[in-house]
Image (cartoon, rainbow, N blue to C red; front, side, top):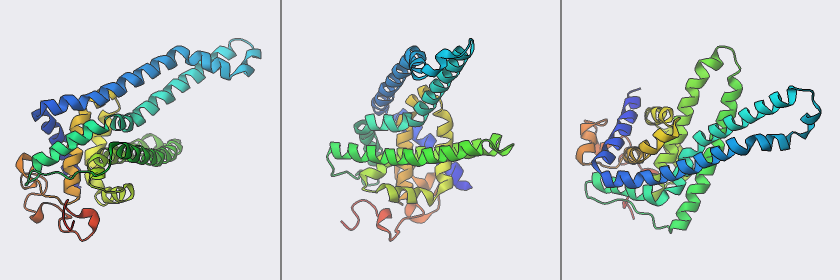
Length: 284
């Protein structure tokens, strides 16, 4: 359970890092603001033309006696808008990361250079279009997994008592896990870690991931809040990715002053024989 607190510390450290690097924070806000404007425009368009769309899609209700056509179509319009709003919340992070790939890659690399003992950072050899394609493909795969969980939890929501108490809590933990996967992907993809290995790596320390992602998932329920927390979330996820791979960290975020104080080699997986945990440049 100690890892829950450690994960939250990384979330705080990420926000603290961008607070010390105002220029990086400013650049990191741009993708979130772009995504927010696009989503607001889409929701406004849905609010304006949603009723017309529902009317067009339900011609069979024309012959119903009043007031049933209006009530039925009003209900469908409300459901349509609610689903669109839920989809916006679920996809906001993935879309922002996709739009902001160059911004967040740069921010994550700066974090790595800042806390690395030798001032270096892993660099991807892939061209930007290839990186964007991989990011979009992996985000879609993660979204499919998240939607499968959402369907399961929605069905369990009808179970008396458990559906109104336990299931929502589980939902936030699941959301926090997938949100953290999206955020750590910025740093781990640059290190050449494939999606399957990323998921295995995150599952190896679920409580750490929950401690980071679950509070963030609660905050990200409000997209406006997500815009301002996103740069720090990427920075914190980069710091946590270094921990997960057992990479040494120096400076203010040195683990000797934080979650791994007293642990040799700065992390639970340092020196791990699996190439997935190999330090950048080792053996290459």
